[in-house]
Image (cartoon, rainbow, N blue to C red; front, side, top):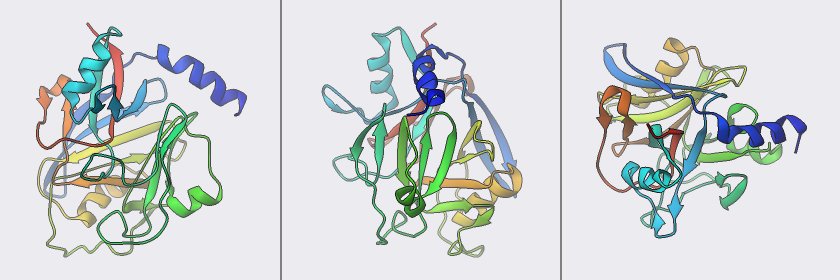
Length: 241
């Protein structure tokens, strides 16, 4: 572990700024964006003493005993019927589910897929590249497909596709200091969603989290989406006011 990462891990629990969330429109569709910087206390959540949290409400209940609450949150990757992560899942430096690099059915197996990893910076890394040169991650979640990879759209995302859903994902800045989380408020196809990150937000790497079940918790916008239980959840932690 580098000195820089060690210092970041030591200081991260003290960070208490909140993500900035806003509504926007792009190419005829509405979206909600939440932007996070390295000064935010961004974490992944999956399970507590009673099993998988499954909801923003249960994560908040777990944080309440520590005098904390979610600043914003959304679902953060695909999961099995028992809510276990489909691919790599790292929480506080501990790997709880392994990396998957084979192709397969469904959106997750539509290679290239990728890993959203953060420690001393935010990174979205293609999964096989991650395996070949694995970075230190305080938190990491694997999902797929990649939406944008080194400034290029995933080659199998078709502009004319009629497969449209509410979708969510994350993109990162080239310098690794910002992560922008997005959820569509309208049903969009993969190509349109990927273009949001590249063409509107100027982000060269972006990863799809999920569709149809996509949900957002953004109290500053008065938003708390409900629905089916979730697997991995990503969100910022702030002091409970």
